[in-house]
Amino acid sequence: MSAVVGALGAALGVMASRYSDAVDAEQVLDRLKSEFLPLADQDAEAYGQVNKALALPKGTDEEKQRRKAVLQTALSEAADVPLKGMGMAIRGLEVLAELAPRCNKNLTSDLSGAARFLEAALAGCAENVAVNASGLLDKIRRAGLERDQARLEEQARALMTRVAEGVESAHARR
Image 1: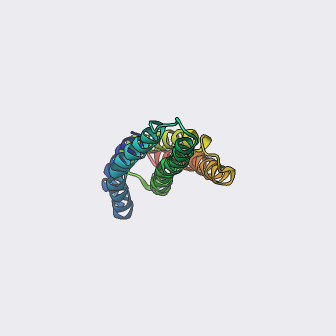
Image 2: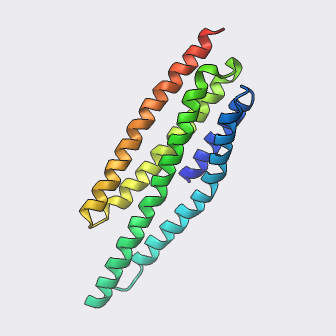
Image 3: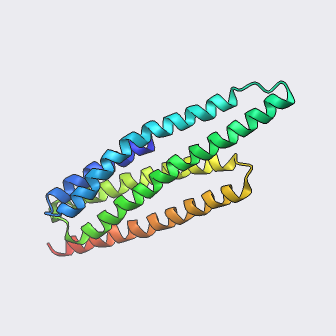
């Protein structure tokens, strides 16, 4: 559901950019809005695959091995989907950070709200990456996912600071 929150953030950003004469930002955010919604379905499908793997029989050694292999594949794929969502949220935050200083001064609260929705989407996706990565036995794959997650979270913090500074700058124009 974090992807749905991302779609809401992108949609609010579309409105703020539309009334700020920022066609470039509007187009990117509108595309992101459209990409976030199918990601919610992909995330649900990935979760379903993990559940199916967990439900596999584990009575014999062969069944245990098969279950373990299927579960590892499902967890890896279940981590990839929210990681993609984190990247999408970063793209949206980048656009909003660029737009913030030139945003229509009457829409800065909407732009801030859009950024907060995208930040929340990123945080929810990060939690999903973490929980799925934690079950991976492949330490290199797990470490890579954890590294990517941390990097994107750090980027989000920096972008949120830029958004806040840009909004401040827009307010100073009043």
